[in-house]
Length: 80
Image (cartoon, rainbow, N blue to C red; front, side):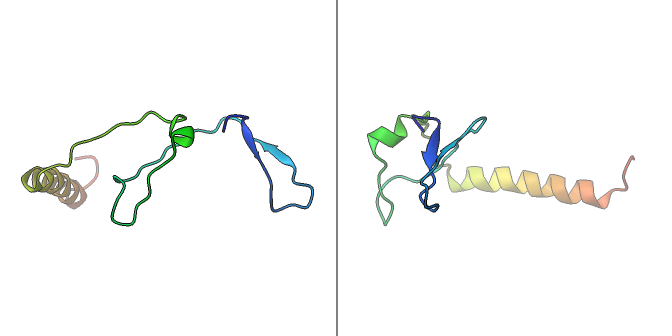
């Protein structure tokens, strides 16, 4: 990522493949329970955000509203 590309280790020439116009996005849970931590050398390429886990009532409220909207919008004929 530092050099805007990677070497193609699958080819005998080990040619450098330049990457342009690529964005990386990653997600992970906290380390533990079989999940590994990420090295500082790699994580420096990303903006790190932490979101507090939602409570069960909040998740039920969010997803029930989404499901209600989905089923109501699918049951009505298009364009009114």
